[in-house]
Image (cartoon, rainbow, N blue to C red; front, side, top):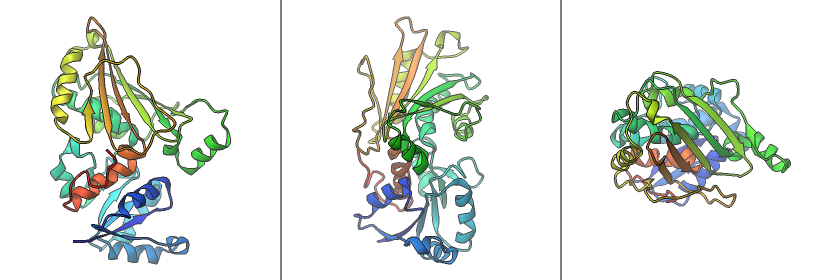
Length: 307
């Protein structure tokens, strides 16, 4: 069976990668609009009503407006923007956390943010297991390649090779924070410190823990074991137990839909660092959308993913 897919915003970074992933697959037929049609509300409305699935690769406001074009259709939607991540009636597109069945049966799925993917993969299972407190004021430090910032930020970094590091979100209240808090089940919004580095893709997300100061907390070994058990034999998420002295992001990183997790602990067990490494355009964006789309279409979850 062939499923028709309309990608609204196929000219953007995430949209282009989804087209590249789905294009060669016989299970999908892509409905693509040319430059003129993309400006036509009627052409887009017709595409929504003709498609089995649609993927929104749009700015937040445009993603909300797109729902009016799809109104009255039977199209099932994956939204790659942040517009609906904590909205009522939407399923959060993180199958490992919310359940594969929930995503498979959903008509409206919202892609997780790239930074929240790393944070939630580390923290949510441990809070659920009672190994980390839900009412702790967590902080999360992260760096990402510049491709996650869209065309303007890509151009800024590529036009100015002198930029070595961009710290941002300094006014707090970043749009990723609500989904971090909700899906980790936290009482307080985490203190989120994101930054951008001069690499096209790749991301490291870190959660430092003062275990000795927490009212409840497992040892670093217990945290690692719990994560390994939670993700089991996942073909996408790997919890590493081998020791290492450093983690690297390389400018030559190729597209990947993997999610790699580590737990580093001090010798006395009083401190730990939870670390996630992923491709911000893979499991953090287009790869996550394809994973959800596979499940919604009743296909193998990892089909078309770079693992």
